[in-house]
Image 1 (cartoon, rainbow, N blue to C red):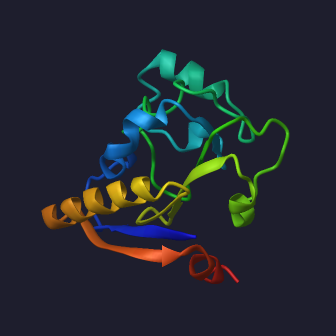
Image 2: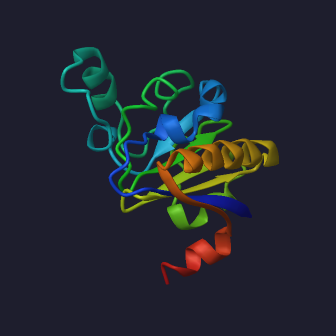
Image 3: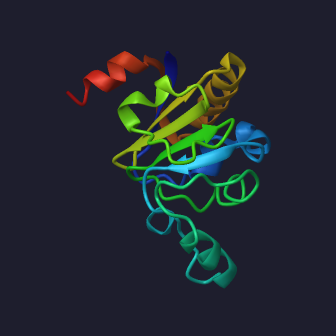
Length: 161
C-alpha cells in the first residue's frame, strides 16, 4: 500500500488538524483506535474539564465512537509516537498491532507519527491520499513542512527491523 510521508519543519507549529485538514469533515464518521492512552497525547485538556473527563474515559485499546474524538480534538493532538486508526466498524476486543493494521479490512486510514516530526498517512481511498498530498504540498510552500513524498508501507516497515 502506498502512503504519504510528511516531515514537519523542526520548530514549526503544525498540528494534526493543520496537516490533515481536508479530511476533518469525514473523520466524524469513523470509529477510532489509538495506540496510546489519549490523556498522554492531547494538549490543552487540563484547562477544559469536559475534555479531560471525556479523554480519561477511553482506554488504549478501546474503540472510540464516531463524532466523539475526531475532528473535535484534531488541533489538540501531540505529534509524538502517535498511531491513530480510522475504522469503518468497531474492532471490539480484536487486537490491532501497528505492524499489521493493513490486515484489518475495517481500518480505512492510518496516521502514524514518529518522533514528533514525521507523519505517515495510509488510506484505502486513493482520493483521500491525493487530498492530503495536495494539502501537505501547500503547507510545504508555507515553510511548516520540509518534505512530502510517497512511501510504500513495506518500505516504512523495513525501517523497524
